[in-house]
Amino acid sequence: MKTSERVQQIRNSEEHVRRRWFWGLSFGFGIIMILIWAAYIQVALPKTKNALAVEQKTETAQQVEPGEGFFSVLGKGFGEISKKAEDGWKVIGGKSSLYFSEIKNLIEKERSVDLKPETDLKFAPAVIDEIPPAELPNTAN
Image 1 (cartoon, rainbow, N blue to C red):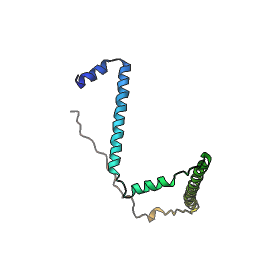
Image 2: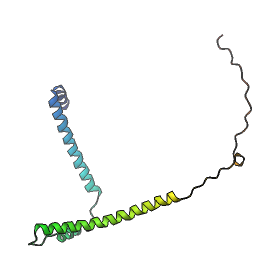
Image 3: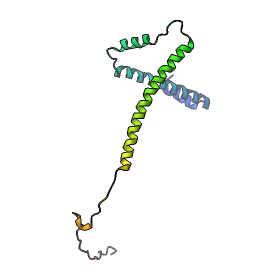
């Protein structure tokens, strides 16, 4: 069956069949686009020279010692998270205090406007002669 015949058959079918085709094709094309995007990212972003060495180091650093219980591992995790959070709050606090100090300086900055009379202007409108009214030619004839 040709593609055009199949499309016409789907057009002429019932509503639930058309919806099923719509969602199926949408899902299929979505998956295809995600695969194309992932392939593009793999090609566009090259691996670093020491990517494998870094991956191995991180895996060995996070190994759990035998005999450790659930709560000790959970406690270590919370400890690491709190260290990262503390560092993050320091960075956020430093940046926000910098922003607020800049805003404070802008607010406290004294502003003044000097108004000069019109005679000090380096430009002035030119005097235009008045144009006398003229009669239009009679186009009704």
